[in-house]
Amino acid sequence: MNREELLNQLLVMTFNEIMDAENRALITGAFKEISINDVHIIDAVGIAEPRNMSTVAKKMSVTVGTLTTAINNLVKKGYVSRIRSAEDKRVVLLSLTEKGRKVYRRHAAYHKKMVQTVMEGLGGEEMDVLARALEKIRGYFQEV
Image (cartoon, rainbow, N blue to C red):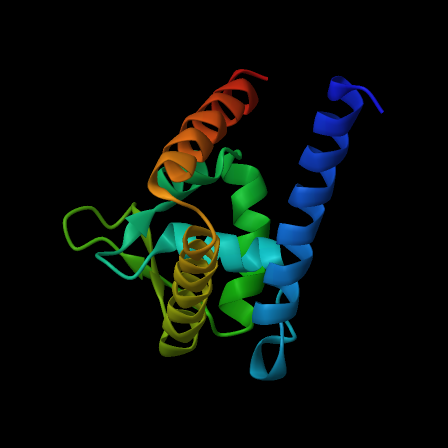
């Protein structure tokens, strides 16, 4: 296997394994009714102050129309609530319910543990090299 084939295989396998592991860790028990995409939307809504649809859509790199469909499902399932802005009643803000905040915290804890586990197996220089390589890979995907 040449270098290009190896890198392709490693990228694809790593992406799939991260997604599978995240799915197994998060979509269990009380949260079986949502998808990993729903978890990422919950993460984009966040636990700070309520956000408008445009802000969340931009963070997710999707259109407001696409996000609306997903948000409708999360509202029905009790993870997200819609709130009218006090300043402008035409503006709808998104906020997490307690159920949504539980998912948010579980997702954050999963990512923290994942990063800690990766860091345990690397020295300082290896972490720096990995970070630079991941920044370059991310840059590529932001351009396509």
